[in-house]
Image 1 (cartoon, one colour):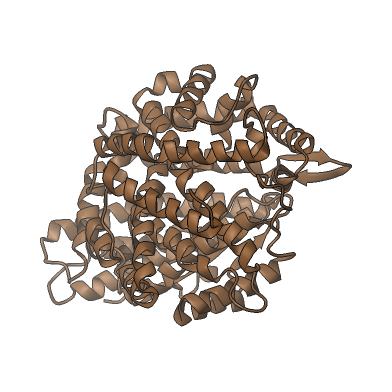
Image 2: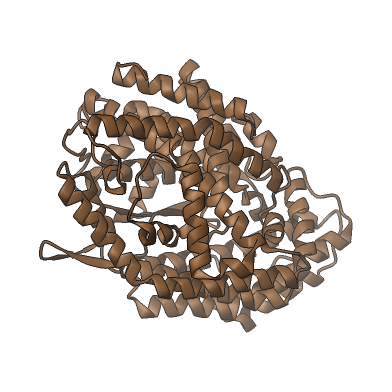
Length: 571
Protein backbone atom coordinates (compact mmCIF):
# COMPACT_ATOMS: atom_id res chain seq x y z
CA UNK A 1 0.00 0.00 0.00
CA UNK A 2 1.48 3.35 -1.03
CA UNK A 3 0.53 6.33 1.14
CA UNK A 4 -0.21 9.69 -0.43
CA UNK A 5 1.92 12.48 1.00
CA UNK A 6 1.80 16.05 -0.38
CA UNK A 7 4.48 16.47 -3.02
CA UNK A 8 5.56 19.98 -1.99
CA UNK A 9 6.63 21.32 1.38
CA UNK A 10 4.44 24.38 0.82
CA UNK A 11 1.40 22.10 0.82
CA UNK A 12 2.83 19.92 3.57
CA UNK A 13 3.40 22.92 5.86
CA UNK A 14 -0.34 23.64 5.89
CA UNK A 15 -1.21 20.16 7.17
CA UNK A 16 -2.16 19.74 10.80
CA UNK A 17 -1.10 16.87 12.99
CA UNK A 18 -4.50 15.11 12.70
CA UNK A 19 -3.96 15.11 8.93
CA UNK A 20 -0.43 13.69 9.14
CA UNK A 21 -0.80 11.28 12.04
CA UNK A 22 -2.80 8.66 10.06
CA UNK A 23 0.07 8.30 7.58
CA UNK A 24 2.51 7.63 10.38
CA UNK A 25 0.17 5.23 12.12
CA UNK A 26 -0.29 3.30 8.88
CA UNK A 27 3.49 2.93 8.51
CA UNK A 28 3.80 1.73 12.12
CA UNK A 29 1.06 -0.86 11.61
CA UNK A 30 1.55 -2.08 8.04
CA UNK A 31 2.67 -5.75 8.12
CA UNK A 32 6.27 -5.99 6.93
CA UNK A 33 7.54 -8.73 4.65
CA UNK A 34 10.66 -9.20 2.56
CA UNK A 35 8.52 -8.49 -0.50
CA UNK A 36 7.10 -5.11 0.60
CA UNK A 37 10.05 -3.82 2.68
CA UNK A 38 11.53 -1.56 0.00
CA UNK A 39 8.16 0.03 -0.83
CA UNK A 40 7.54 0.59 2.89
CA UNK A 41 11.00 2.18 3.29
CA UNK A 42 10.30 4.43 0.29
CA UNK A 43 7.01 5.62 1.83
CA UNK A 44 8.64 6.25 5.18
CA UNK A 45 11.57 8.02 3.52
CA UNK A 46 9.27 10.37 1.61
CA UNK A 47 7.33 11.26 4.75
CA UNK A 48 10.50 11.99 6.73
CA UNK A 49 11.97 14.07 3.92
CA UNK A 50 8.75 16.09 3.78
CA UNK A 51 8.81 16.72 7.52
CA UNK A 52 12.50 17.64 7.63
CA UNK A 53 12.39 19.89 4.60
CA UNK A 54 9.31 21.71 5.88
CA UNK A 55 11.06 22.48 9.16
CA UNK A 56 14.20 23.52 7.26
CA UNK A 57 12.31 25.93 5.00
CA UNK A 58 10.39 27.41 7.93
CA UNK A 59 13.70 27.83 9.80
CA UNK A 60 15.18 29.63 6.81
CA UNK A 61 12.15 31.95 6.63
CA UNK A 62 12.50 32.82 10.32
CA UNK A 63 16.26 33.37 9.98
CA UNK A 64 16.31 35.68 6.98
CA UNK A 65 14.21 38.16 8.98
CA UNK A 66 14.17 37.68 12.74
CA UNK A 67 11.67 40.56 13.06
CA UNK A 68 9.08 38.62 11.02
CA UNK A 69 6.73 37.53 13.79
CA UNK A 70 4.54 35.53 11.42
CA UNK A 71 7.50 33.48 10.12
CA UNK A 72 8.63 32.80 13.68
CA UNK A 73 5.10 31.79 14.67
CA UNK A 74 4.77 29.44 11.69
CA UNK A 75 8.05 27.77 12.61
CA UNK A 76 7.20 27.40 16.29
CA UNK A 77 3.66 26.19 15.56
CA UNK A 78 4.78 23.56 13.08
CA UNK A 79 7.60 22.39 15.32
CA UNK A 80 5.41 22.14 18.42
CA UNK A 81 2.12 20.95 16.91
CA UNK A 82 3.41 18.72 14.09
CA UNK A 83 7.13 18.01 14.23
CA UNK A 84 7.34 17.14 17.93
CA UNK A 85 4.45 14.61 17.90
CA UNK A 86 5.83 13.29 14.59
CA UNK A 87 9.09 12.43 16.35
CA UNK A 88 7.17 10.32 18.84
CA UNK A 89 5.25 8.60 16.05
CA UNK A 90 8.46 8.07 14.11
CA UNK A 91 9.90 6.17 17.02
CA UNK A 92 7.05 3.66 16.68
CA UNK A 93 7.88 3.28 12.99
CA UNK A 94 11.54 2.66 13.76
CA UNK A 95 10.63 0.11 16.38
CA UNK A 96 8.27 -1.59 13.92
CA UNK A 97 11.22 -2.09 11.55
CA UNK A 98 13.56 -3.23 14.33
CA UNK A 99 10.98 -5.73 15.60
CA UNK A 100 10.51 -7.23 12.14
CA UNK A 101 14.03 -8.75 12.12
CA UNK A 102 14.04 -8.31 8.33
CA UNK A 103 17.37 -7.94 6.56
CA UNK A 104 17.60 -4.34 5.34
CA UNK A 105 18.52 -3.58 1.72
CA UNK A 106 22.21 -2.94 0.92
CA UNK A 107 23.41 0.43 2.18
CA UNK A 108 20.90 0.52 5.03
CA UNK A 109 23.09 -1.18 7.65
CA UNK A 110 24.46 2.04 9.18
CA UNK A 111 21.00 3.69 9.41
CA UNK A 112 19.80 0.54 11.18
CA UNK A 113 22.66 0.87 13.66
CA UNK A 114 21.63 4.47 14.28
CA UNK A 115 18.03 3.38 14.83
CA UNK A 116 19.03 0.83 17.42
CA UNK A 117 21.01 3.50 19.26
CA UNK A 118 18.10 5.94 19.05
CA UNK A 119 15.68 3.31 20.28
CA UNK A 120 17.86 2.84 23.35
CA UNK A 121 18.00 6.63 23.76
CA UNK A 122 14.34 7.36 23.20
CA UNK A 123 12.42 8.90 26.08
CA UNK A 124 8.98 10.39 25.55
CA UNK A 125 9.50 12.92 28.35
CA UNK A 126 12.31 14.43 26.30
CA UNK A 127 10.16 15.36 23.31
CA UNK A 128 8.74 18.46 24.96
CA UNK A 129 12.19 19.27 26.37
CA UNK A 130 13.66 19.10 22.87
CA UNK A 131 11.05 21.58 21.67
CA UNK A 132 11.84 23.86 24.64
CA UNK A 133 15.54 23.54 23.85
CA UNK A 134 14.93 24.73 20.30
CA UNK A 135 12.91 27.69 21.57
CA UNK A 136 15.84 28.69 23.80
CA UNK A 137 18.17 28.41 20.82
CA UNK A 138 15.89 30.65 18.78
CA UNK A 139 15.82 33.14 21.64
CA UNK A 140 19.63 33.19 21.64
CA UNK A 141 19.72 33.79 17.89
CA UNK A 142 17.22 36.60 18.29
CA UNK A 143 19.41 38.31 20.89
CA UNK A 144 22.46 38.12 18.64
CA UNK A 145 20.49 39.13 15.55
CA UNK A 146 19.40 42.36 17.26
CA UNK A 147 22.91 43.38 18.37
CA UNK A 148 23.91 46.63 16.70
CA UNK A 149 26.13 49.56 17.64
CA UNK A 150 26.57 53.22 16.70
CA UNK A 151 29.69 53.78 14.63
CA UNK A 152 30.46 57.25 13.27
CA UNK A 153 26.80 58.21 13.26
CA UNK A 154 25.56 55.01 11.67
CA UNK A 155 23.76 52.07 13.25
CA UNK A 156 25.70 48.96 12.17
CA UNK A 157 25.58 45.26 12.94
CA UNK A 158 28.41 43.73 14.93
CA UNK A 159 29.47 41.91 11.77
CA UNK A 160 29.84 45.21 9.97
CA UNK A 161 31.79 46.56 12.93
CA UNK A 162 34.27 43.68 12.63
CA UNK A 163 35.61 45.07 9.35
CA UNK A 164 37.12 47.93 11.38
CA UNK A 165 39.41 45.37 13.01
CA UNK A 166 41.36 45.36 9.73
CA UNK A 167 42.04 49.10 9.96
CA UNK A 168 45.80 49.91 10.01
CA UNK A 169 45.15 52.50 12.71
CA UNK A 170 45.44 50.71 16.05
CA UNK A 171 43.30 53.27 17.88
CA UNK A 172 40.45 52.68 15.44
CA UNK A 173 40.76 48.92 15.84
CA UNK A 174 40.72 49.10 19.60
CA UNK A 175 37.74 51.46 19.62
CA UNK A 176 35.77 49.11 17.31
CA UNK A 177 36.74 46.04 19.32
CA UNK A 178 35.76 47.61 22.63
CA UNK A 179 32.48 48.91 21.19
CA UNK A 180 31.59 45.45 19.92
CA UNK A 181 32.44 43.76 23.22
CA UNK A 182 30.60 46.41 25.24
CA UNK A 183 27.49 45.68 23.18
CA UNK A 184 27.94 41.96 23.89
CA UNK A 185 28.41 42.69 27.58
CA UNK A 186 25.04 44.44 27.49
CA UNK A 187 23.40 41.07 26.78
CA UNK A 188 25.54 39.17 29.25
CA UNK A 189 22.82 38.58 31.83
CA UNK A 190 20.16 37.63 29.26
CA UNK A 191 22.46 35.10 27.59
CA UNK A 192 23.65 33.75 30.95
CA UNK A 193 20.02 33.15 31.93
CA UNK A 194 19.39 31.28 28.67
CA UNK A 195 22.55 29.25 29.23
CA UNK A 196 21.51 28.24 32.74
CA UNK A 197 18.18 26.99 31.39
CA UNK A 198 19.86 25.17 28.49
CA UNK A 199 22.44 23.34 30.59
CA UNK A 200 19.83 22.40 33.20
CA UNK A 201 17.43 21.19 30.50
CA UNK A 202 20.11 19.16 28.72
CA UNK A 203 21.20 17.52 31.96
CA UNK A 204 17.56 16.61 32.64
CA UNK A 205 17.23 15.11 29.15
CA UNK A 206 20.27 12.93 29.86
CA UNK A 207 18.94 11.76 33.22
CA UNK A 208 15.51 11.05 31.73
CA UNK A 209 17.18 8.74 29.19
CA UNK A 210 19.19 6.94 31.87
CA UNK A 211 22.57 8.63 31.37
CA UNK A 212 24.82 9.99 34.08
CA UNK A 213 25.58 13.18 32.19
CA UNK A 214 24.74 15.01 28.99
CA UNK A 215 28.10 14.22 27.40
CA UNK A 216 27.35 10.49 27.42
CA UNK A 217 23.80 11.16 26.19
CA UNK A 218 25.00 13.44 23.41
CA UNK A 219 27.68 10.96 22.33
CA UNK A 220 25.05 8.36 21.56
CA UNK A 221 22.67 10.97 20.14
CA UNK A 222 25.33 12.02 17.63
CA UNK A 223 26.06 8.39 16.69
CA UNK A 224 29.71 8.56 17.72
CA UNK A 225 30.57 4.90 17.33
CA UNK A 226 34.02 5.40 15.81
CA UNK A 227 35.68 7.30 18.69
CA UNK A 228 35.27 8.03 22.39
CA UNK A 229 35.49 11.05 24.74
CA UNK A 230 38.95 9.77 25.65
CA UNK A 231 39.98 10.02 21.98
CA UNK A 232 38.92 13.66 22.10
CA UNK A 233 41.03 14.28 25.18
CA UNK A 234 43.94 12.63 23.36
CA UNK A 235 43.31 14.91 20.40
CA UNK A 236 43.27 17.93 22.74
CA UNK A 237 46.76 16.91 23.86
CA UNK A 238 47.93 16.45 20.26
CA UNK A 239 46.65 19.92 19.41
CA UNK A 240 48.30 21.41 22.48
CA UNK A 241 51.67 19.88 21.52
CA UNK A 242 51.56 20.35 17.72
CA UNK A 243 49.15 23.13 16.72
CA UNK A 244 49.32 25.46 19.72
CA UNK A 245 53.08 26.10 19.31
CA UNK A 246 52.52 26.72 15.58
CA UNK A 247 49.77 29.20 16.42
CA UNK A 248 52.08 30.86 18.91
CA UNK A 249 54.71 31.15 16.18
CA UNK A 250 52.17 32.86 13.92
CA UNK A 251 51.13 35.32 16.61
CA UNK A 252 54.77 36.01 17.45
CA UNK A 253 55.44 36.93 13.82
CA UNK A 254 52.35 39.16 13.78
CA UNK A 255 53.64 40.98 16.86
CA UNK A 256 57.12 41.44 15.41
CA UNK A 257 55.82 42.63 12.02
CA UNK A 258 53.48 45.09 13.71
CA UNK A 259 56.38 46.32 15.85
CA UNK A 260 54.45 45.93 19.11
CA UNK A 261 55.51 44.87 22.57
CA UNK A 262 52.41 42.67 22.87
CA UNK A 263 49.62 41.45 20.63
CA UNK A 264 46.18 42.53 21.78
CA UNK A 265 42.78 41.04 20.77
CA UNK A 266 42.15 43.93 18.36
CA UNK A 267 45.42 43.23 16.50
CA UNK A 268 44.49 39.85 15.02
CA UNK A 269 42.67 40.88 11.83
CA UNK A 270 44.89 43.70 10.60
CA UNK A 271 47.55 42.95 8.02
CA UNK A 272 50.85 42.85 9.96
CA UNK A 273 52.72 44.42 7.02
CA UNK A 274 50.32 47.39 6.99
CA UNK A 275 48.85 46.52 3.60
CA UNK A 276 45.28 47.68 2.97
CA UNK A 277 42.53 45.19 3.85
CA UNK A 278 41.60 42.69 1.17
CA UNK A 279 38.24 43.53 -0.34
CA UNK A 280 37.49 40.69 -2.76
CA UNK A 281 34.01 41.87 -3.80
CA UNK A 282 31.74 44.87 -3.55
CA UNK A 283 28.31 43.23 -3.54
CA UNK A 284 26.63 39.85 -3.26
CA UNK A 285 26.22 39.42 -7.01
CA UNK A 286 29.97 39.76 -7.47
CA UNK A 287 30.60 37.28 -4.65
CA UNK A 288 28.29 34.75 -6.29
CA UNK A 289 29.62 35.12 -9.84
CA UNK A 290 33.29 34.96 -8.89
CA UNK A 291 32.71 31.96 -6.63
CA UNK A 292 30.81 30.22 -9.43
CA UNK A 293 33.85 30.62 -11.68
CA UNK A 294 36.06 29.03 -9.02
CA UNK A 295 33.83 25.99 -8.72
CA UNK A 296 33.87 25.46 -12.48
CA UNK A 297 37.68 25.40 -12.25
CA UNK A 298 37.66 22.89 -9.40
CA UNK A 299 35.24 20.55 -11.16
CA UNK A 300 32.66 21.22 -13.91
CA UNK A 301 29.92 19.26 -12.15
CA UNK A 302 30.43 21.14 -8.90
CA UNK A 303 30.19 24.34 -10.91
CA UNK A 304 26.88 23.21 -12.35
CA UNK A 305 25.54 22.46 -8.87
CA UNK A 306 26.32 26.03 -7.79
CA UNK A 307 24.70 27.40 -10.94
CA UNK A 308 21.49 25.60 -9.96
CA UNK A 309 21.62 27.21 -6.51
CA UNK A 310 21.92 30.65 -8.06
CA UNK A 311 19.14 30.03 -10.55
CA UNK A 312 16.77 28.66 -7.91
CA UNK A 313 17.55 31.36 -5.34
CA UNK A 314 18.99 28.96 -2.83
CA UNK A 315 21.42 31.63 -1.59
CA UNK A 316 20.90 34.48 0.90
CA UNK A 317 24.38 35.86 1.44
CA UNK A 318 24.18 39.55 2.42
CA UNK A 319 24.32 40.99 5.91
CA UNK A 320 21.47 43.18 7.15
CA UNK A 321 19.70 44.16 10.33
CA UNK A 322 17.24 41.64 11.80
CA UNK A 323 18.90 38.73 10.09
CA UNK A 324 20.00 35.76 12.21
CA UNK A 325 23.76 35.68 12.86
CA UNK A 326 26.59 33.71 11.30
CA UNK A 327 26.33 31.42 8.29
CA UNK A 328 25.21 27.88 7.56
CA UNK A 329 23.93 25.48 4.95
CA UNK A 330 20.48 23.93 5.33
CA UNK A 331 19.82 20.70 3.45
CA UNK A 332 16.47 20.23 1.73
CA UNK A 333 16.18 16.42 1.80
CA UNK A 334 13.08 16.17 -0.39
CA UNK A 335 14.57 18.32 -3.15
CA UNK A 336 18.06 16.85 -2.54
CA UNK A 337 19.40 20.38 -2.68
CA UNK A 338 20.51 22.94 -0.10
CA UNK A 339 20.16 26.56 0.99
CA UNK A 340 23.18 28.69 1.94
CA UNK A 341 22.67 31.45 4.52
CA UNK A 342 25.38 34.02 5.25
CA UNK A 343 26.06 37.55 6.47
CA UNK A 344 28.63 38.70 3.90
CA UNK A 345 30.14 42.15 4.39
CA UNK A 346 32.86 42.23 1.74
CA UNK A 347 35.97 40.63 3.19
CA UNK A 348 37.95 37.46 2.56
CA UNK A 349 36.29 35.63 5.42
CA UNK A 350 33.06 35.73 3.40
CA UNK A 351 34.74 34.05 0.44
CA UNK A 352 36.05 31.30 2.68
CA UNK A 353 32.66 30.84 4.29
CA UNK A 354 30.90 30.54 0.93
CA UNK A 355 33.44 27.95 -0.26
CA UNK A 356 32.89 26.10 3.02
CA UNK A 357 29.09 26.14 2.95
CA UNK A 358 29.07 25.22 -0.74
CA UNK A 359 30.98 22.06 0.20
CA UNK A 360 28.01 21.15 2.37
CA UNK A 361 25.61 21.97 -0.45
CA UNK A 362 27.58 19.81 -2.88
CA UNK A 363 27.23 16.97 -0.40
CA UNK A 364 23.44 17.23 -0.70
CA UNK A 365 23.66 17.20 -4.50
CA UNK A 366 26.05 14.22 -4.56
CA UNK A 367 23.75 12.16 -2.35
CA UNK A 368 20.76 12.70 -4.66
CA UNK A 369 20.85 9.12 -5.96
CA UNK A 370 20.58 7.51 -2.53
CA UNK A 371 17.09 5.99 -2.29
CA UNK A 372 16.30 6.54 1.40
CA UNK A 373 16.14 9.58 3.66
CA UNK A 374 17.93 7.71 6.43
CA UNK A 375 21.03 7.40 4.21
CA UNK A 376 21.46 11.17 4.27
CA UNK A 377 22.34 11.24 7.97
CA UNK A 378 26.09 11.66 7.46
CA UNK A 379 28.27 12.07 10.59
CA UNK A 380 29.34 15.67 11.02
CA UNK A 381 32.93 14.50 11.30
CA UNK A 382 32.67 13.80 7.59
CA UNK A 383 30.15 16.49 6.68
CA UNK A 384 32.86 18.98 7.63
CA UNK A 385 35.44 17.19 5.50
CA UNK A 386 33.18 18.03 2.55
CA UNK A 387 33.20 21.73 3.46
CA UNK A 388 36.77 22.21 4.69
CA UNK A 389 38.31 20.25 1.84
CA UNK A 390 36.42 22.51 -0.57
CA UNK A 391 38.10 25.56 0.98
CA UNK A 392 41.49 24.02 0.20
CA UNK A 393 40.63 22.57 -3.21
CA UNK A 394 39.27 25.93 -4.37
CA UNK A 395 42.08 28.10 -2.97
CA UNK A 396 44.43 27.83 -6.01
CA UNK A 397 41.73 29.47 -8.16
CA UNK A 398 41.26 32.69 -6.19
CA UNK A 399 43.34 34.41 -8.89
CA UNK A 400 42.31 32.28 -11.87
CA UNK A 401 41.99 34.56 -14.88
CA UNK A 402 40.09 37.79 -15.62
CA UNK A 403 37.32 38.61 -13.17
CA UNK A 404 38.90 36.62 -10.35
CA UNK A 405 38.78 37.77 -6.75
CA UNK A 406 42.47 38.68 -6.58
CA UNK A 407 45.79 39.27 -8.25
CA UNK A 408 48.34 36.50 -7.72
CA UNK A 409 49.97 38.52 -4.95
CA UNK A 410 46.72 39.17 -3.08
CA UNK A 411 45.57 35.58 -3.60
CA UNK A 412 48.78 34.36 -1.92
CA UNK A 413 48.10 36.75 0.92
CA UNK A 414 44.52 35.46 1.27
CA UNK A 415 45.68 31.85 1.24
CA UNK A 416 48.32 32.49 3.88
CA UNK A 417 45.70 34.16 6.07
CA UNK A 418 43.38 31.19 5.58
CA UNK A 419 46.03 28.58 6.38
CA UNK A 420 47.17 30.48 9.44
CA UNK A 421 43.95 31.79 10.96
CA UNK A 422 41.28 29.43 9.65
CA UNK A 423 43.35 26.26 9.81
CA UNK A 424 46.36 26.23 12.13
CA UNK A 425 44.95 28.61 14.74
CA UNK A 426 41.51 27.01 14.50
CA UNK A 427 42.75 23.72 15.94
CA UNK A 428 43.63 25.30 19.33
CA UNK A 429 40.45 27.40 19.13
CA UNK A 430 38.24 24.32 18.64
CA UNK A 431 40.17 22.37 21.26
CA UNK A 432 39.41 25.17 23.74
CA UNK A 433 35.73 24.97 22.79
CA UNK A 434 35.59 21.22 23.17
CA UNK A 435 37.54 21.07 26.41
CA UNK A 436 35.22 23.72 27.86
CA UNK A 437 32.13 21.73 26.89
CA UNK A 438 33.56 18.48 28.29
CA UNK A 439 33.83 20.37 31.58
CA UNK A 440 30.35 21.93 31.26
CA UNK A 441 28.46 18.72 30.66
CA UNK A 442 30.30 16.65 33.26
CA UNK A 443 29.95 19.50 35.82
CA UNK A 444 26.49 20.91 35.04
CA UNK A 445 25.86 22.48 38.43
CA UNK A 446 29.07 24.53 38.34
CA UNK A 447 28.58 25.36 34.67
CA UNK A 448 25.25 27.09 35.28
CA UNK A 449 26.97 29.66 37.47
CA UNK A 450 28.02 32.54 35.20
CA UNK A 451 31.10 33.47 37.20
CA UNK A 452 32.40 29.92 37.50
CA UNK A 453 31.74 29.20 33.84
CA UNK A 454 33.42 32.41 32.74
CA UNK A 455 36.50 31.67 34.81
CA UNK A 456 36.70 28.16 33.37
CA UNK A 457 36.42 29.52 29.83
CA UNK A 458 39.26 31.99 30.48
CA UNK A 459 41.44 29.23 31.94
CA UNK A 460 40.78 26.93 28.98
CA UNK A 461 41.34 29.71 26.46
CA UNK A 462 44.74 30.53 27.92
CA UNK A 463 45.72 26.85 27.83
CA UNK A 464 45.23 26.52 24.08
CA UNK A 465 45.52 30.10 22.78
CA UNK A 466 48.74 31.73 24.04
CA UNK A 467 50.38 34.69 22.39
CA UNK A 468 47.61 37.27 22.79
CA UNK A 469 47.74 39.74 25.68
CA UNK A 470 44.38 39.96 27.51
CA UNK A 471 45.69 41.93 30.50
CA UNK A 472 43.06 44.29 31.87
CA UNK A 473 40.35 42.51 29.86
CA UNK A 474 39.19 39.84 32.30
CA UNK A 475 35.46 40.49 31.86
CA UNK A 476 35.81 40.63 28.08
CA UNK A 477 37.67 37.32 27.99
CA UNK A 478 35.25 35.60 30.34
CA UNK A 479 32.22 36.34 28.12
CA UNK A 480 33.96 35.25 24.92
CA UNK A 481 32.13 31.93 24.90
CA UNK A 482 28.73 33.65 24.77
CA UNK A 483 29.26 34.74 21.15
CA UNK A 484 30.06 31.19 19.99
CA UNK A 485 26.79 29.78 18.60
CA UNK A 486 27.90 26.14 18.72
CA UNK A 487 27.64 26.10 22.50
CA UNK A 488 23.99 27.06 22.28
CA UNK A 489 22.84 25.60 18.97
CA UNK A 490 25.02 22.52 18.39
CA UNK A 491 26.40 21.31 21.74
CA UNK A 492 29.62 19.29 21.75
CA UNK A 493 29.90 19.58 17.98
CA UNK A 494 33.03 21.74 17.85
CA UNK A 495 35.54 18.88 17.93
CA UNK A 496 33.98 17.48 14.77
CA UNK A 497 35.46 20.46 12.92
CA UNK A 498 38.94 19.77 14.25
CA UNK A 499 38.70 16.08 13.35
CA UNK A 500 37.31 16.87 9.91
CA UNK A 501 39.95 19.52 9.27
CA UNK A 502 42.64 16.90 9.67
CA UNK A 503 40.78 14.78 7.11
CA UNK A 504 40.40 17.77 4.78
CA UNK A 505 44.13 18.49 4.88
CA UNK A 506 44.76 14.90 3.81
CA UNK A 507 42.38 15.35 0.83
CA UNK A 508 44.25 18.55 -0.07
CA UNK A 509 47.60 16.74 0.24
CA UNK A 510 46.34 14.23 -2.32
CA UNK A 511 45.27 17.08 -4.61
CA UNK A 512 48.83 18.42 -4.61
CA UNK A 513 49.80 15.14 -6.28
CA UNK A 514 46.82 15.12 -8.65
CA UNK A 515 43.86 17.49 -8.45
CA UNK A 516 41.50 15.57 -10.75
CA UNK A 517 41.97 12.25 -8.96
CA UNK A 518 41.63 13.85 -5.53
CA UNK A 519 38.38 15.60 -6.52
CA UNK A 520 37.02 12.36 -8.00
CA UNK A 521 37.69 10.51 -4.74
CA UNK A 522 36.24 13.43 -2.76
CA UNK A 523 33.00 13.39 -4.77
CA UNK A 524 32.77 9.62 -4.57
CA UNK A 525 33.04 9.79 -0.78
CA UNK A 526 30.31 12.45 -0.63
CA UNK A 527 28.00 10.29 -2.73
CA UNK A 528 28.18 7.44 -0.19
CA UNK A 529 26.14 9.38 2.33
CA UNK A 530 25.55 7.29 5.43
CA UNK A 531 25.97 3.87 3.83
CA UNK A 532 29.36 2.96 5.33
CA UNK A 533 31.07 3.63 8.70
CA UNK A 534 32.84 6.93 9.33
CA UNK A 535 36.31 5.44 8.96
CA UNK A 536 35.39 4.09 5.51
CA UNK A 537 34.09 7.51 4.41
CA UNK A 538 37.55 8.88 5.22
CA UNK A 539 39.20 6.03 3.33
CA UNK A 540 37.00 6.65 0.28
CA UNK A 541 38.14 10.28 0.28
CA UNK A 542 41.78 9.22 0.52
CA UNK A 543 42.22 10.13 4.18
CA UNK A 544 42.39 8.48 7.61
CA UNK A 545 40.34 9.17 10.74
CA UNK A 546 43.06 10.15 13.22
CA UNK A 547 43.58 11.69 16.68
CA UNK A 548 47.33 11.27 17.14
CA UNK A 549 50.06 13.86 17.36
CA UNK A 550 52.07 12.38 14.49
CA UNK A 551 49.32 12.73 11.88
CA UNK A 552 48.43 16.20 13.13
CA UNK A 553 52.08 17.21 13.11
CA UNK A 554 52.40 16.17 9.46
CA UNK A 555 49.39 18.31 8.57
CA UNK A 556 50.76 21.33 10.42
CA UNK A 557 54.12 20.90 8.68
CA UNK A 558 52.46 20.78 5.25
CA UNK A 559 50.64 24.02 5.95
CA UNK A 560 53.79 25.67 7.29
CA UNK A 561 55.70 24.70 4.11
CA UNK A 562 52.89 26.01 1.92
CA UNK A 563 52.82 29.30 3.84
CA UNK A 564 56.58 29.62 3.34
CA UNK A 565 56.22 28.92 -0.39
CA UNK A 566 53.40 31.46 -0.78
CA UNK A 567 55.25 34.13 1.14
CA UNK A 568 58.60 33.26 -0.48
CA UNK A 569 60.28 33.50 2.91
CA UNK A 570 61.35 31.01 5.58
CA UNK A 571 58.56 29.78 7.88
